[in-house]
Image (cartoon, rainbow, N blue to C red; front, side, top):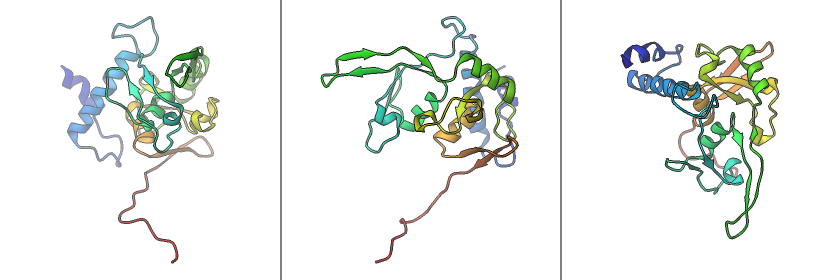
Length: 202
């Protein structure tokens, strides 16, 4: 039964998809789990998206060197890149603590991508925009091409729909996604260097 559900989702997504079969099946299982959570097939409050509580410092959110890992409820600590991915399409609540870790201010929760913006994004993109991917809009998250942490806006021109796997590849996997003239998406693989870093002139 579960194999019947996963097999179509585990197909290779283009010639560049070098994942082995077991990795593709695992990724398909994650896709199914996220889809069911986000669409209310697992009990949750109303029709809201999955609730994950991530506690992070501003330094970690910005990915600054030496910043501590963030805390994900019921999980191990997570990296600043994972926080950046989760923060692409979420609600943010600002909580200020004093030097004794006593709460001194709690802001109002604010959606990064508003409901109307998400509807417009779904209508425009229709599915994951990664070339060759056909995951429908309901299986995607909104992605900021220039992350709002780094000054990007939540205007439609700076947003794109990405499925779980491709959203992970952009953030934790260090791929780049660039919108070309005409709206097509260009994917740029991470730069890999080997050996010691080059020395400057002596």
